[in-house]
Every structure is written in structure tokens, then in C-alpha cells.
Length: 314
Image (cartoon, rainbow, N blue to C red):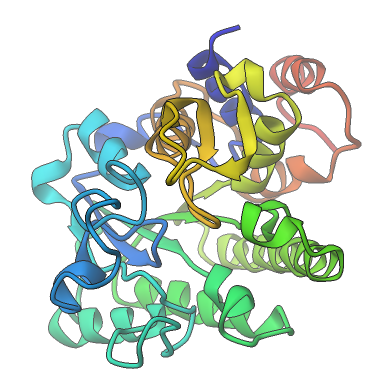
């Protein structure tokens, strides 16, 4: 099975909201987030100091473009996409690189001050939380999840009706943490609790806003599939950083101790693209879309087939 095809199949499994014609309805992306989405903002605002480029490429925290850039290109939305993401951003107002750079809440504050009313055709991407746990000293997932929930509520109140919200990968399984068993176990627990809280937040938001389109991107499921079966995605190394090895980084999942390679970002983009462009429509929005993940774990292909045959799982 080709890597892209598998990503699409996984996306269909975890598509948690109605998705018919969503790509056509999106006029552009507005992105809030951290280094996983930063297209050079931190680099420009530190006068080229962070991340050092080279070896990092064009101010990205990887060796190429990040996932949202690739996704905007796939959907022909690059001219209408605005990126406010900064490396080091926590979900709140702090930044783990330097206090001179914004957190995600700060990014949203600035945006809403200049744009108190937003276009309903713009899709708002909010991906945050990793830096809260990795460098922000947060050990209570309710804090980042609460910050993200507040951001989504504020965007919705301003007129947004299209939200794209990735969850967190297992932070205990990245190269920079997996070698420390105590730290790894703690971060795995925090990642799980964060994702559970985020899912509940999105379910509640969908229930209170029935016309709101929410596309959760289950990065955790994708990440675990890649780690557990790397060859299926074209990787030969999913445990070490490629940076400094001189190897072919397209065969590595990780560029450095924390960040995916450009190929890793591409897989995320392919996954997100399949969610936004799939002709499949799943309804009702709330419990099917946000409740599929509660089904007992089985083989992925079997779960996809079951979902297709029974569009109203319990």
C-alpha cells in the first residue's frame, strides 16, 4: 500500500465531522500555532537566529515546507492563507524560545484586535499544546485544553464557522524524550489526557453550534501508525533525528529531536487534505464525528469498512 493511500484511508476513519464539499467552501486558511506550523515567523522576528538556517531550511523548523503550506498548495489556497504561528508558542501567552515572541493566545488576541469580524469562508487552524508540556512547565492538561477551547469560542463568536484542530502526537515517543523513561511516560500520559480533553471540548463546541464545521485531525493516530509500521509510509528510521547524519532525510520521520522532516509534514498534509476533500459525508455531526474514536480498537481496515457500511455507529 502506498504511503499516501494509507494516509487517506486513515483520514476517512478519523474524519469526525461532515466533510462533503468542505475544500470547495474554504476561501483560505488562517493559522495559529507553534513550530509545527511556523512558516518563518520566528526566524524573521529573531533576525534569522531561530532556527539557524542552514541547517534548517528557509526559517522553518524542518528541512522544507511545513504541513499547512503543503496543504494550502494542494488546495490552491496559498494566496489567501495567513500564518500567525510562531515556534516556541505555548497555548497561552508565553513562548519557550523568548518572551518577545507570542504564544498562541497572543497570536489570536492580535488578530481579533485588527479583525473583530472574520469571514465565514476562511478556515481557522489552531494547533497548540506541545510547548506547554515540553518547555512551558505545564503538567495540568486542563490548562492548554482550556486555552484552546477559549480560542475556538472567540473565533466562533467573531464569525468563524470552519475550524481545523489537530491534536497532539505522543510527546513521549519523539527522539528528544523517548530516551528518558520517566519523562517519556509522563509526556505520554499528558498527551493522552490532552487529546481526551480536546475531543470533549470539540464535542461540546459542536453541540452548541450545530452549523459549525469542525475538522479534528487525529495526529496522534497517524503518528502511532507511522511509528508502528514505518515501512508502510516509506520510512526506514522513526526513532532518530536526521539532522547532522548526512542521510536521506526523506526516509526519516524526525528532522531534529522534536520536529518532523519535510516528508513527515507531507504525510500530515496528505492526511489533512483527505479530510478536507473527501466526498464522504458523515452525519449527524456531533456523536458520529466526535464519537468514532470511542469505538473498540480493531484493525484499521476493518474499522473503515464498518464505518462505510454503518454510517451511524454507536
